[in-house]
Amino acid sequence: MADPQIGIYGLGTMGAALALNMADNGIEIAVSNRSAGPIAEFMTRAEPFAHHVTALDTLEALIDALPTPRLLLAMIPSTAPMDAFLEQVIPLLAEGDTVIDAGNADFHATRARSAKLAEHGLHFVGLGVSGGEDGARHGPSMMFGGSEESWTGLQPILSKIAAQFEGAPCADRMGPDGAGHFVKTVHNGIEYADMQMIAEVYDLLRHGAGLLPSEIGAQFARWNDGPLESYLFEITGKVLSYDDPLGKGPMVDAILDRAGQKGTGRWTAIEAVKLGQSATMIEGAVAARAWSAEKALREVAGAALGADRAGVTPDVEELEAALLAARILEYSQGFRILAAASEEYDWQLDFARIAEIWRAGCIIRARLLDDISAAFREGAPEGQLFLAPRFAPVLERGIPALRRLVSEAIAAGYPLPVLSSALAFWDTLRQPRGTAALIQAQRDFFGRHGFDRVDGKDAHHGPWWG
Image (cartoon, rainbow, N blue to C red):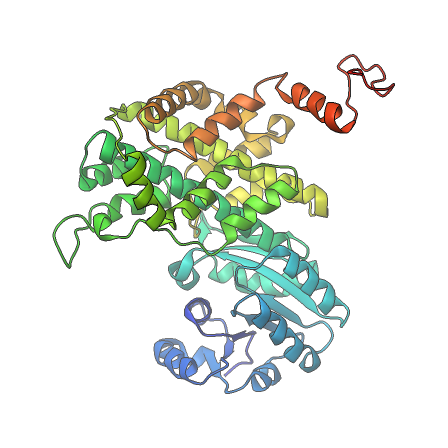
């Protein structure tokens, strides 16, 4: 058996899936886990590829089995357990070795860990992995953040196990330290917005137009054959077609209307605000999940305030146009956050390449990403997707459709935290002169903060209101 090319520590759902992917692609791996049970279970699953796998009982043995410079991938919680893991492995590693965190991590923690390992002559990689268990097993989209030297060592492995789009791997180096984990965080924020947007349209079609879940599922399947093609539209069509195996009626009706969240969407919203970029569509999706958790309160409020909603009859073709426009605005907000972070941390992110590696293997893969990549390569005006000429015809048709949809739905009592936020974003940025002059005047009145005049004259000669 050849020497292992990489070690994998942590054989939970995602760690085992990545390890099986590597072994299946002929990559020599060594694996271990804190407890012995998952190792034995993994070796049973890896039996067809056992000649590519070395199983070891301890972390120390795993590290000893790796040739230098070592590549050690950890798939463990990227919080306190990761810090404890690093304290354990730093004394066991040699200069030039690389540790890879392939979990969902706060990019600030990744930057701090990168700096800490650099003090010991070690490399730390924050690897964003998208696609869930199935993606990890059969080809994820991967966003690498780390040194060029560590990328050189890891690229041959990642290129083999990544999802492929037209023969190109959906994996690339985003930049140093926390760049990979930050791009993955924003990916997840966009995912939140996309899922909530779909849920809002489902609500309108189900309770407004009176369609059955199976009928709505069929409509999503039809949309998925056109410009809205995406993984989330595809699975929505499938999910809505299932019946409850334990009772009567659609499966979606048997599921409690309380959505969980792991925090990455919230991280996106928080970092957007810190960077001066309020991503309202992502914020709306995060808020919707938080409100969904208040099931008991919603039941009380519904009884006290009334839960009635009027019927609406959205046109299917107009809905498609509105959804496509909203999706362009959703990605516009996501890439604005990436641009702000790239400037703040000097990452020099390649936005076209990011769009390209999201085209396969990840949750937000969509046909639209081809146009997004092309728009960035063509040079979107002011770096803004919503100003890109290739999107002008789509938005010219889609924004009026979105406006009619939002107006009718809100008048009828339907909550649209994402779709209405899309319209507010669009309407705010298209106004050369907005409402902030009055806000700044108010700030100056009660706090003497000062302000800039339109004509450029000195505004700081004393209170104008005294």
